[in-house]
Amino acid sequence: MTVLKGVILVGGPSVGTQFRPLSMGVPKPLFPVAGSPMIYHHVNALAKIPGMKEILLVGFFEKEVFDRFLADVQSEFSTVSIRYLREYQSLGTGGGLYHFRDEILRGNPDKFFVLNADIACSFPLESILAFDSQKKAAATIFGFKVDRKLVTKFGNVVLNPETAEVLHFVEKPETVLSDTISCGIYLFNKDIFGVMAEAISSLRAKLLKMDAASDSRPSLLTSNQAERIRLEHDVLSLLAANKQLYCYVGSPVKDFWMQLKTGSSTIPANRLYLQHFKVNAPRRLSHVPTPVAVSPLTPTTPSTSSGIVQPVFIHPSANVHPSARIGPNVSVGPRAVIGRGVRVKDAIILDNVEINHDSCVLNAIVGWDSRVGSWSRIEGAPGESLQLNATYKGMKVPSACILGNNVSVADEVAIRNCIVLPHKELKTSFHNEVLM
Ligand SMILES: *[C@@H]1O[C@H](CO)[C@@H](O)[C@H](O)[C@H]1NC(C)=O
Ligand SMILES: *[C@@H]1O[C@H](CO)[C@@H](O)[C@H](O)[C@H]1NC(C)=O
Ligand SMILES: *[C@@H]1O[C@H](CO)[C@@H](O)[C@H](O)[C@H]1NC(C)=O
Image 1 (cartoon, protein in one colour):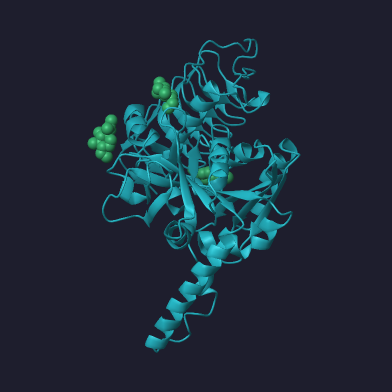
Image 2: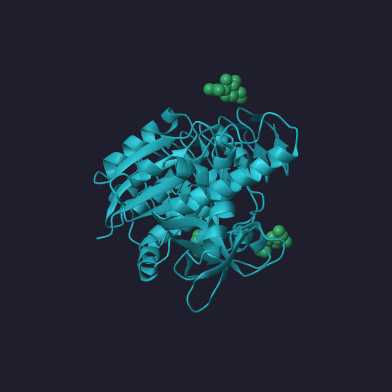
């Protein structure tokens, strides 16, 4: 059996700025999507592959940030070691991997996966592995076909249609080269570190030349500049030139992929994961959505509520009134309280949120500890445009409605297409605004 490792590139605190205000409540990689932290889905997909020995999170967040997450996933996936390796400065996506090459190669894995944290995907990792084992190359990347209008925002992959060999790899090209993009999922063997060393020395040579040509001090070569290589830009293009790169293209029917760049992109991602778990085997029994109604509002009502439209994820500690109508495509976090007659659709309701009777939440994210009064409406751009524009095509998502943590919305107001920063108290209606 192939001995495997997995690396998840989690980045650092400076990365999530487009993710505000949600990254103010929790580090972006831990933001809950479909009831689990964003990178839980990565860990889950990696841990299930036979032969997986170790999963390494690589990034430059404080160590404590991942302590609780690591304890949770370690107890769930007990046969795989799961650890966090902290970079003390950002070394770029390639530089970080190179820096930890000894850790990655310890135990002599045959191959290792590298996954970017900020994606939502069906993660067909075993198919990628099977494909890769037929090729004798240093690397296979996961590609996905997107609308030609979007191709230039991503790494563009030009393939030999017969062999799936990557002929060119160009990061964010000026003109469209093909409709296939690189999705931030890579499978490497240990030869990749030789290629990275090559990329580092050519970068060093370039910096030396720049140093010689300018009087600027200190030298560009100090402070590990040359080790700050980017995986796509510096390494993959070199691999393609060396005929060492293949691309497994995802199925438009069975797979999904999207980038989680902005806060609002978590709404279609939540929807895609919930739909995926509905069709495919659920992750584990405790995650099978079972509505619980032990609400203090209705102490005598049994827990079988007919108001649930699948797929939804409702945390067992949430209280949902039986007359509330929840779903489809909704996640409700721990200790949330959803009152009588409330309607929630295409939304993420975070921990300890309270939504009072007869309110409505559509295409929205309601942040931790927020409170929505009664007869109010929190509404973002309609699900359909989100879906067409973002779901299958990795596209920019139109504005949803996002409430940060500890936001309070009064009774009988409407908040439409707004981004609301934490701790705000909204007493009147607003639309199309960022409320600071
Ligand atoms: C829920 O999400 C799934 C997956 O994207 C989609 O197929 C379905 O149409 C959505 N349902 C509604 C009512 O939006
Ligand atoms: C998708 O986005 C475009 C522009 O960004 C917009 O014109 C369109 O209405 C959106 N929705 C659909 C369903 O295409
Ligand atoms: C929540 O916001 C209110 C203002 O609406 C503020 O007074 C309160 O201190 C905040 N609570 C926390 C825990 O930050």
